[in-house]
Length: 323
Ligand SMILES: [Zn+2]
Image (cartoon, rainbow, N blue to C red; front, side, top):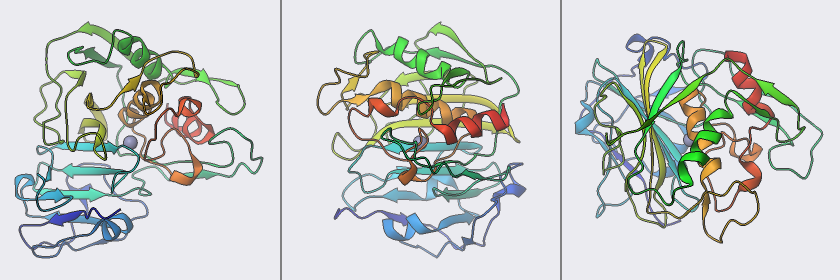
């Protein structure tokens, strides 16, 4: 992939452990490093490190794929933006944090916060995706209340989208293990409150705008078109370690399969149930797990991955450990 990802940083900084700003944002296994003055980071550098900057406003820095394209902005203060990219993108995912105290962070896969990361080794590899090993990693918040959300159907691919999203969301409360068929039940609760005309927090630049007190799932075009852009974005507003609002935006520039059957996904379509279940995983507080292990919380998505729309052993272990 020739596309370069660069991170431009507007001012010098010290290492900023964000735990001082958002309670619970204490990296468990991160080796944070300084941001460089006007630093430009290639995708390969970003992918191997975690970079946090202090003393820069979120509007001062952006992630750029190339000089001619608009950069990804950072979220409004106090927000966390999780962008999931389509397969083939220069970058599979990225988590952007902006605290209310002027710290801005880029968090990479493989970083767990708060709770100890757990890796379960299931040596009984099978033909099913995600059953040859399992892992979960956490983001620094949990829900102590029901996540109540509204749905804005504007730009949805078809009328089946809402049901697909609802069923995907419910998988974080009850479902069956994709590998074993064994049922599970957690205490995480979501409630669908009906449709709305409210916009979600996502902006056209692919980041999270201001919180508005309403959790909304919606459809909105985000960078960068259909070849390597953002598939979905989760915008989360933690208050300390407690989640208070979570918006999910899907990018309608892609084609989505909304069918209930694992068969029949048209070539090149993305399985909405898989993506929606993954995004709700972020809402619950799950971070990305090792891409090689193919859990639902893996970091990138190809077309028609209907065999991966259910929770895998690591996803379930992480869920039940918290809820
Ligand atoms: Zn993700």
